[in-house]
Structures are given as C-alpha cells and as structure tokens.
Length: 398
Image (tube, rainbow, N blue to C red; front, side, top):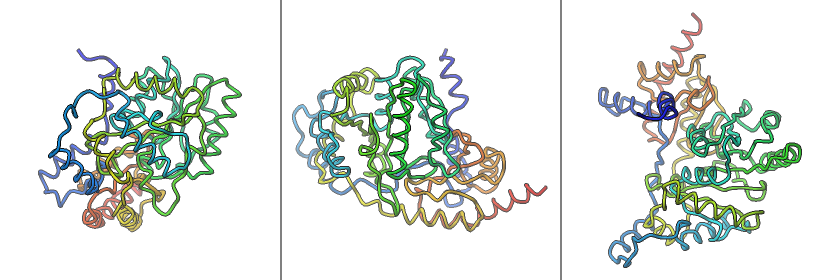
C-alpha cells in the first residue's frame, strides 16, 4: 500500500497535469486546431546550433570512458562554464567551479539545497501564488512549508513577510521572474527584501537562506535583470538550461554559491552528499559535456516578447484584468468567476480553452496561462476568450 502522505498528495495532484491531459482528450475529439491549450509551459525554442554540432562531433568521435561515473559535483569543465557564465552576467561574485554543483534540473538543485540545510520541522517560506512543486520539495526534506501572500501586484509585501518569519525560519524560496505571474522584482526590491531578512535574523536568532530560483532570467522584457548576488546575503542561486537553451527534457540544472560566504565549504560538501544520496547521482554526463563546449550559455529568446504582447492584446480585448508579465512566459489574470476552478472547467468544456486555476498555485480567484505556444493559437483563441468572458459576465449578473 502506498504511504498516507503520497495518497493525500495524489488527491491534490497537479492541476497543470490535469489540464494537460484534458487537452489531449479534447484534441482527439475536436482536432488540435480547435483546442486552445495554454496549460503547460514548454519552451518554444530549440537548443542552439552549436549544441547539435558538438553532439554530432562527440557521437562521431567518442571518448573512451566518456560515459563512466563522474564526480557527484559534476564535470569540472561544465562547472567552470557555469561559473564563467554567471560571472559574465553578474560580475565578480565569488562563484568558481568549486562552488557550482550540476544537478538534475533546477528541481534537483532545490531538493539538494533544502535537504542540505533543513532539520525536521524547520520552516521554509513560500510566497503565494507559487510553483506548486515547492511544497513537495520542502516535504521531501522534512521541513515545514509556511505561506506568505504576495501583494496585489505580486511584489513582496514586506509587512506580510515580517509577520511570517519566526525563529524556526531556515529558508525563503524566491522565484524571479515569477511563475505563475510573470512579475519581476527589481534590484531595489531585492535589497529591501535582504535588509528585512537581516533585521529579522537579529530579532529572532534565525539563520535564513534564500533559495533564488532563476530559470527565467534570460526571458525578461523591457527591464534589466537584477543581480541577486549583489543584493542578497546567504544566497543559494538555482537555475537550469530548460528555458534559455531549450533543454527542458534533458533536466540539466545547477546550484551555485559565493565562495566567500560563511560556511561555503560545508555547504558544498553537503550539496554533493545530498546530490548523491537523494538518488539523482549525476545530471547527464553527455549534456554536461555538450554545454561545456558551447561558446556561450546565452541565447536570443526569439518570439517570447511578441507572444507576450499578443496574449496581452487578446486578454485585454476580451476584458480580463491582469498584471502584465515582465518575464517568463506566464500570465496570471483574475478569474471573472469567484470560483476559479469552475471558471477553468467552463473554459475547457464549452470553449475548448485549457487554463490552470489559481487554486493550484495557492492563490484562488485567478488562473494561469502559458503563452509559450504558437502565435497562431494565440490569435485563434481571441474570439473564444471574448465569448468566455461574456458568458461569465452574464452569469455574474444573474
């Protein structure tokens, strides 16, 4: 028999996957062109040409022992490439190949970080709305998830955060740019956030780590990317190559820290141990080898801004209220029905629009959609969104 915890989690399983599966069913009935699936955030770009060139070269000239076990921290050349990439973006931040660990995606990095620092029932603050897997990652490390609502514009409400921190607070997970809202916290907000954490540490005696989850930082529109290393103390920087290099299915991520951080050596030893004993072993050695050979780990994010603009136009035209996203590829509008789950069910059953209710992200009264879809789908959905909004408007007037 399965565990009680897993059984409970299965009953509350991801709305994202539920709606994705519903989309597959509807497409089989109505045809793919007549279903508007905005449920899942798959990158629309492919890896750069240099990635495939390196892969072909390696396949035709294999290295003897090239698929053997490697250090649990990852290939030195891959870690050095990541450190150089971060230095190029953020300056002299104290990150070297010795303070980077390659992981099984950003998810693996978050699990490694949490397992390394949490004692049983230590508290981890998660801002709502949030990427739904965060709470499971905290549970994996026997921690306690504590929820702090973001402000109406999805920035950090410092007063709410201050009231949430206790002597048991061990970490805060900060996703920036943010999934599901697309909000971006600028440099000054990160600095204010850090200042509050330091004040609360002095007040409560807590030691608070910031797990900065940053897989969308190359998908920022019209704004400068903030530098978390310059703003936040005790920073664990987490990212992946899923979105910016189009390698989502390869599950290659990393965790990096400043080597000058107090306890850096102990942290790295813990990360390596956790990476091994959580069962990940290593991120794919072949993919690590390929990214180490790329001339750059940045890539033009062609088409995302245009998709964002088109989706904003469609939703505005229909009458929806939302905070315009500044990064990533998600929007989190207000639901025109009080019950966001009923709204998403109506959208799917009557208008073939696949959306994810805000309740699935810890923020009822909203819904999430991904505009990482074809421009044609966005434009084809225009009349369906209009009709959906009008039906909700009529329902509210009854």
